[in-house]
Amino acid sequence: MEQLLNYIGANMEMVYFLILAILLGVEVISNVPAILHTPLMSGANAIHGVVVVGAIIVMLQASPENYLALTVGFLAVVVGMLNVIGGFVVTDRMLEMFKKKPKKS
Amino acid sequence: MINLNILEISYLIASLTFIIGLKMLSHPDTARKGNLWAAAGMGLAILTTLTLYQDFDSAKGLNYVLIFVGLLVGTVIGTIMAKKVQMTAMPQMVSFFNGMGGACAALIAIIEFQHHQHSQITGFDGELLVMLLGLLIGSVSFSGSMIAYGKLEGKIKDKVLPMNQVINMVLLAAIIGLIGYQMFAGSDPVLFFILLGIALVYGVLFVMPIGGADMPVVISLLNSFTGMAAAFGGFLYDNKAMLTGGILVGSAGTILTILMCKAMNRSLTNVLLGAFGAGAAGS
Image (cartoon, rainbow over all chains, first blue to last red; front, side, top):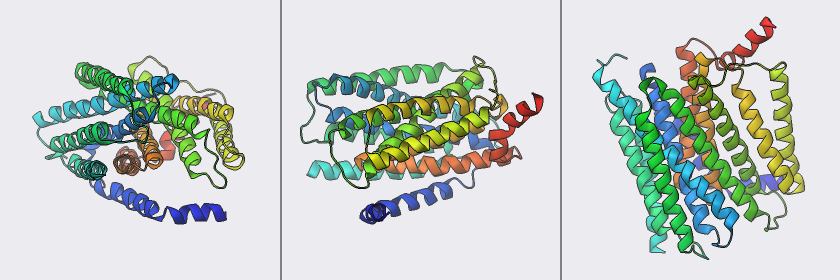
């Protein structure tokens, strides 16, 4: 327990960051009209594709002889990029469709 | 050093575009622009990471080649899939891409775990916890999203296993046990991969009993899961762009899930357990 408290104490800045970001996420979308639920979900889906940055870092840290890490990391980069590109393109296509309809929400 | 500062600033800008993008996405007039803003921020974060990130034993040519090939393959396949998909098939496409993000987070956790094996940490090992949670949530999100995708595509039928909810509870207890044990007794590769397997099965059984019409809600929930998994990745590398993006999507996604349930006049518990109740009553 003491170790856990020490850990939290040492990372207090991170804890603040976490809590404020959670509240911000709640606040930022709280007034979304029902018609935008699906595009917003898709847009958020694209944003968590930022995990690809982690995949790139993994690859940059891997030693060139570590073929296991390189292979798994390569896969991670591919699927992460799929998430980013696919997410943004699909969202854009959805919203493009919305434009042609009269806006009622 | 200058490079690292520029990198951090670019992450700050990316974080801002994610927040602004989400905000704009929740208004009909600005939604499309918001999406582009977020995409621009994402592009910036990827580009600066590629060019400015420095490690002590920095990467060699092969690593860069693999990264570029990976980015290219992901971009090409992603664009083709997203452009070709029918408008009516959009939700399952979102689910598919969401699953890919979850897989990415889980794969990162797997590699980092291999590195972690060599370090001897005594006391509370926050890094290990973050890794295990990233693996868990990433793989649940991956397998769950793939099932949701298959269901909406009509490739997988609604099926309720006998005692599905009981099995889920047992799996959940096993997951908590595996993580708890490793927190006390130190990391163990065998247990790590058992955890991976159970998490994948749990994702399947979690989505399996839920009816097709409720799928968008489940996809939204899995979406926020992947956000959390990305945030855990951010903790590992102390990467602010991953942290903001992940946490924002984690919390906004959860609220969005609840809003979607409300729009259908139902509660989240009702959606998640509703199909199970109906199945139990029928049997």
